[in-house]
Image (cartoon, rainbow, N blue to C red; front, top):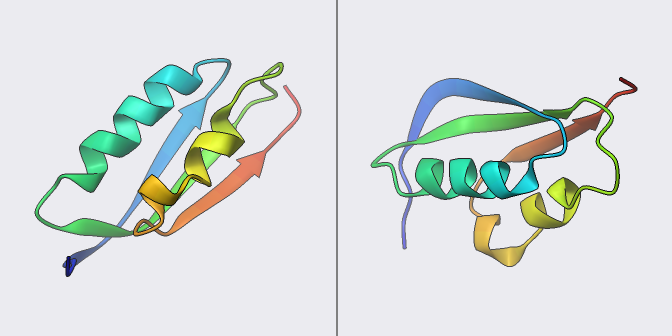
Length: 71
């Protein structure tokens, strides 16, 4: 599948809600144009699976940057 990219960045804040993050990324992936980059900012989640979700093969077409900061 060939993807088309829009000149935008998407910033997604997250905190202990990996299930919502997965749904959000799935929604972005089905758009007709993908953003140039997606920045996920994890605000100190406890044992959350956010990092595992964004590194899954399903989201490999998305240019995702992951930042984990201390809450």
